[in-house]
Image (cartoon, rainbow over the protein chains, first blue to last red):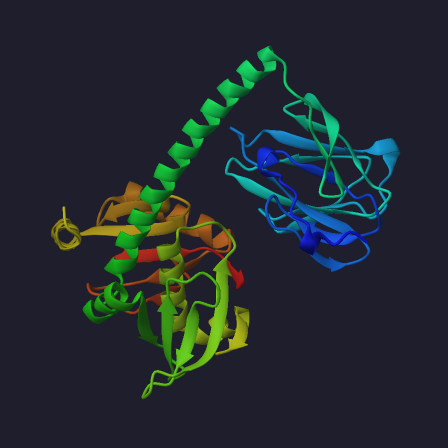
Length: 263
Length: 89
């Protein structure tokens, strides 16, 4: 078994497109810089793919000879797992994405296709693994890639600005519905408190996971933590406001929805 | 314009506002008393987002009034906020 925990293949040159073929029945998580071992059935790796410019871009993964044993596709952007058939096409998000793939020893990747253009893979031996990477581009392809990358960088900058504006707008909405004490708490500590109709005091923080806590009203000791997230993407301040509105008006519903953890 | 100025302007113009949380922060639909076309537009939007699983809260008054769940559109509401469907994280 290959001990990926003690293997640090230099994949930095391939952080945009990396395909790794398991040479033995090994389970490992391998991302571009930090591999780990965690079992012995399947190999898991993470591929980072960035240069996409439109939501209609697709990525097709095709197995060699139709081998599909144990081959699955986990899309971390959409929290979904898809079992690969002989060929599976996935729509890419327009933001930078990280994809995790899992496949068994009989599964391997034959082609990497983007926008209908197949990129033949070439094998590189790195750290005991066969790393399949897209072959060297021709000058013409490099020029096309440079244009694509420039467009991608422009797109990413536009997205960054849009997210910044959305955050600012959501912050205004949040603060409009906070009282002066809550606004002061948020400014000083990064959280504010609300009183729910169950008689408890709740702390809402800017953290992402389990960011709502039931606190002892006298000591402010944390008693329970709750995680409730929107089903659609909204800026973080909107999420805080949604928590506030739910807690103050319908705390039973909030708790029923929530993933609850001890403090 | 400051937030306080915004609120003063709303009060002065008797503007009512429906805010729907979305990826851009929020989208707003406004109306004033007597503007039947704008009110009907707000009413239809209210019904649409309810159907999509959004929850409406009515928040009247300045400085962080506690929101009340709102199941039917009421044009007298000063401010209405729609939050998206929620799930365990």
